[in-house]
Image (cartoon, rainbow, N blue to C red; front, side):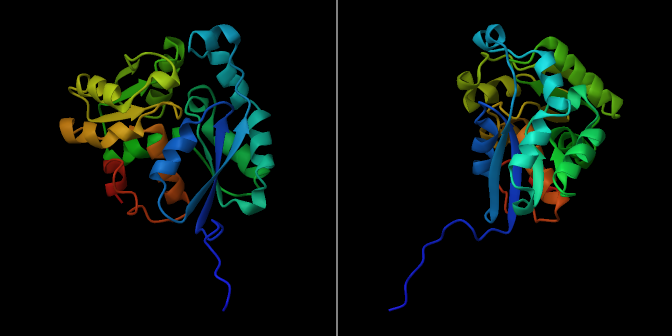
Length: 254
């Protein structure tokens, strides 16, 4: 009898290199939930130096974000993930787009990746705004983002031609472990009047589980950092979007 070999995970149609801050399991968790069959997600970590005082308060500062955007941490993470084995890289870190030039960042990282495409969360969020032709956008950042960083996010959106009606951190307890889809659903449903698109910043912000319910209850499209990043990554390499069916209207608009 011929031997029978079990599936071993090597037979994939697309291999994504997901660039993730050290200590953050959120992006991988959400990508594992929403990525369609045939898409393999392989993470590489980069250093995100949150100080002990900020960590104890479940907060981040602007300076560590600027550190990540500068040459070094992300370049190393790309190089460590064996570029010949990866088809496309996706940066699961929203706030680098708030503080740096995405075009320069992508050019630099793509060179490290041997010319392979690199997609940032910021690029993906801007593409989602264009896709929905939204004019009254609400930016919702994680509760651990300082007001200064959210203000930078607002200025970045406006500099890219986005009409920002509101920009604020979600009114929820800070800390990744304190976020639950039910609480986010209640907060969003109570705060989206007059809004035609919600952008949720922060790839470590537990959000994708609430998207479908909020859209059903409010009629407002909800785009999270990770749904946007996956959507734009698939588009960047010409992969179909129809296999993602439960994570928002973004994937319905092909």
